[in-house]
Length: 191
Length: 60
Image (tube, rainbow over all chains, first blue to last red; front, side, top):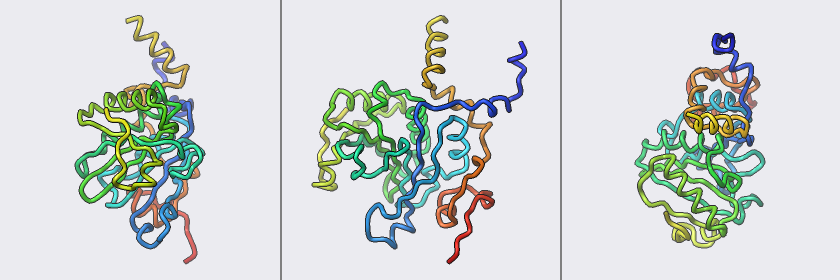
């Protein structure tokens, strides 16, 4: 009976640890235009390891609909950089969902919650997620480690669509292909 | 029912948290973490208002 009458602040004193630590990274449009080298303006914002820390940051930052066009906001496992060149990402790829501009906020939150709450059966395969805010649309991608592991990628893609109740077809692109062919890179898997 | 309790028990001990469980904590965590710092240029485009106490002063 005493447990039920605990004040809400008791929850804050007993933080809920996450399975993984995660880092938010931000790439700002204003910094981008001044710097030639891609990736040179990307910066880590904060690393969190508990449910409470996640909300403390999330509740104080702009959600995708309030970010400027060109912004990239990432949430990656601690010590994995959101770059193709990162050794853990190098052989990976990404699933991507597209949304009308300003319509990705809820999906972005649900993507983050599914990742940090370890809701994916193949969560170990996940590097992180990114939301790209662009003129015509918002894009959310989940980056994974071993692109050639088709079973794991298909499982992640299928579960992601279920979590977000997303009904369009999504495609998986290998980073290797994206590096070689840029925007003309073809989907290796679709679901 | 029993299955649900079982799943919830596993969820907590295995550090797996459902969306509904995580959402319960949102309203309790409105202040930035202690020690959070950010440079002014990023704060301007990323942060909601009222963050100013956490902005790092930089020489320019």
